[in-house]
Amino acid sequence: MRTIHLMNEALAKDSKSDVSEERIIGSIEGLQPGPTVIVLGGVHGNEPAGVRAISSVLDTLKDVESPIRGQLLALRGNIKALEQNVRYIDEDMNRIWFPSILQDIRNTPESQLQSSERREVKQLLSVLDDINNQSESPVILADIHTFSAEGWMFTITSSDPRQRKLLSNLHVPMVFGIEKTLRGTALGYYQKQGFISFGLEGGQHTNDMTAYNTTASLMLLLQAVGCIEEQYVDELKEYEKHLQSHTKYLPTETKLIYQHIIEPGDEFRMRPGYKNFQHIKKGEWLASDKDGKIIADCDGYILMPLYQDQGDDGFFIIIEHEG
Ligand SMILES: [Zn+2]
Image (tube, rainbow, N blue to C red; front, top):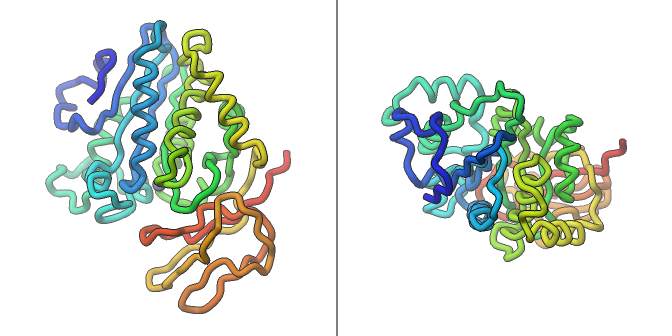
């Protein structure tokens, strides 16, 4: 655990003593008021690059002269799955954030929760439930992920103007609409709680660039919300330049038009070689399953073609969002 300043009292209460030290990647409490930024990494255990990126953000901030405004709280999502480098142990941890399930998790002692992921969520809630969303300063939740195909990074966000304005500072393509079709996600739940919340998909799981892309985006996020200032953090210019050039041929705003859901027993197989944001044409043969060929029914960009065993979404198709 990396504690740079002491955690605030709300987080250090006695009842939190059962939260394992591994859960908190780090926490910085600023001396001046400001936004609360929560960064969640490794909700999927086979996506450790996000956790590495978060650690490197904390390392960078450790050396910054002027403390941040507000608070930065970085949490590890699925500790057991991270240890085993699998997406999940019993169930997908990013598909169970429904109010009814969460209430059940809160009301059930940890030892009686049957699924590993629900025990992990209970620990996260014991920290997150204390975050005060009633103050004037915004609360921002960034849920960090990576994906199995090669290709460019993006954010999953609603098209709410407040979110669009903030995320436009990151120079990372925004994808609207996925947040509605993926049900039970942490980002969807916290959006309903009034947080600014989005998913950051930093790149391919094991690509060397992924952690750097994610670090750069998080640093620009901290700058955009007013937690850190350019004059104190030398690296910000470099991060901005990197992301601008990395994403320069990509559309700024896109929206979902097709999602291929895999049913159990489908024997889904993506055809090899597809990358995030690759152009596809209507009629193109994208994948196969037990019923035969899966053909694109529209032009667009392919997103998150699935090249791993665990996961329920075969691929998404997005198009540029106008206006
Ligand atoms: Zn993920």
